[in-house]
Image: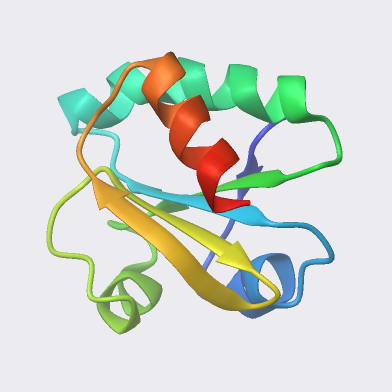
Length: 106
């Protein structure tokens, strides 16, 4: 399973109403650190298969969701479980650190 592009219009359906935990990545095309973690998130989405969903929200094209979530810096990552935020972090991190964060949160 690969990452899922989520918009302001699809955020509730894809994230809050998901049957599995969701890692949400708020990012932008011009963001260097966002590009650094992108491949790691793709790999994690594949490794976890259907156990979690990895959703990506482009803040330039979907400013409403980013504003509602209080995103002030990117990359900004949130983990949703049963429609609620269970953890969040800001900034790039190596794949191993992201995986550890996901494991302790889900």
